[in-house]
Image 1 (cartoon, each protein chain N blue to C red):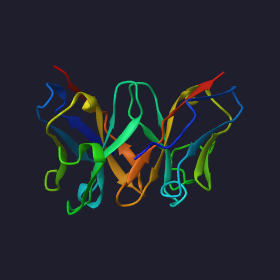
Image 2 (image 1 turned 180 degrees about the vertical axis):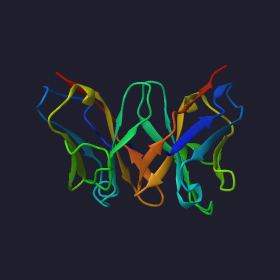
Image 3 (image 1 turned 60 degrees about the vertical axis):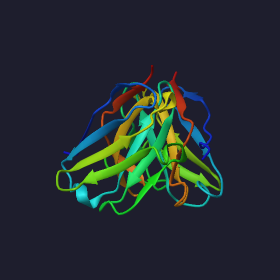
Amino acid sequence: EVQLVESGGGLVQPGESLRLSCAASGFTFRSYWMSWVRQAPGKGLEWVANIKDDGSAKHYVDSVKGRFTISRDNADNLLYLQMYSLRAEDTAVYYCAREASVSWDYWGQGALVTVSS
Amino acid sequence: QSALTQPPSASGSLGQSVTISCTGTSSDVGGYNYVSWYQQYPGKAPKLMIYEVSKRPSGVPDRFSGSKSGNTASLTVSGLQADDEADYYCSSYGGTNNPYIFGTGTEVTVL
């Protein structure tokens, strides 16, 4: 059974940093592109970043470029999102999701990140 | 990176059909056959319902179907059931500089 479990969410002040993790199991993690998708409270979905199966390519939505870094550890089946210089508008539930056929076929339960003073 | 346009709400009676539109541009929806649709219940993670415009993942009922014409994609839910009441989001590939764009979301109500 495919499972994606996020961790690392919490309350931080504007300008601070936070790292999200996503533990993957039930599939060959190193064979799949992975994404982070977020959803602000009461709002729609927004794709944040993705990373190629071997980590050699990464893409970001414009609003997080230079502040967020996606990475992965294929030995331990872990996906990360390092977030710097957090802003109030980064407040959201962050989902990790497996990419397949240019879509996301499996999603984690989400991790809430709240940026507030 | 503007969101794809969906109607905020749609509704249909039990057993009837509802169609949700998703309008983009020739740089995203119209340019690639990579439109996907997601169902989301409140407080839950999204679930993939349609990928590559019209393909259904294993386990998704054939009451759900997708199509595309020009810059607009559509999701049709036939034989509406009570548990089809949820939010639905479309997404499209938008090229290497703008890989993924979501729609604004549609709340479906079953009457």
